[in-house]
Length: 345
Image (tube, rainbow, N blue to C red):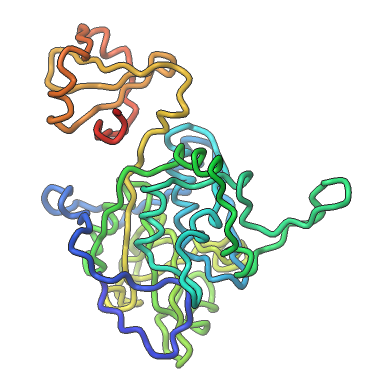
């Protein structure tokens, strides 16, 4: 975590998380030192456009302090696009209304925890914008939200069940002092969410944001979507939630050294996705070839997902279908690792 010192007159938005020894560390699943090509760089938005022909909408949180919910909802949207090859608009409000603090804002960890424990609602089920409805039920206007609207309680039992489709499997923390590790998480997990100490002066000069220098600082969460390097050094790209007129089409650039990230950025979290198995219309089956790996196969989608967690696999006994390597290779890899104890009753 960063060493951010929160001043007494701090304005709400994103708050540094309290230390918790139970947090899973991202470095625990990264073998060796990450090999990052900073000159080549990476941008989630470019890959979404190239692979899925999808352009993300830039959200506007308006005067609300819902930035944590905004950042995680956008991250969840991306993970769902990668899995389903299609776009579903996900609700920032459905996250924020569960985790907001009485003074406004939220802890970063709580946003990740909400997605892992209960998923996220669609924008259709829980709109994150205030809708002006006409006498005939038609939508007359869609207005950016106020804080009072974002914290109103709207999750029903039915909506909560639907939210499970968009769960992540787990969240892991990344220290803010290791630029390569942060870049590795963005590259391998389609991004990360973080928060920073900032002020209006440093964030109103264009795409490149500057560290706080005034006596009116605030905390703000945003979705990290890329990285690169230029004559000013290593930087991270992020998608903000202040509308598409802010920065460069709603995106910003934060330099590792120029912003003093180890001391001004806190709580970097990355999500590991959980397949939307409850949304499959066909049966899933466990199969294996001659090797030690077990796969979960959806014949309809021709998708092959590797399964890990040996205690669970051993408990399956005879329920794994052995097939020839030739037949197994007919299924393209789905690109997702599944811990079977999270999906098998």
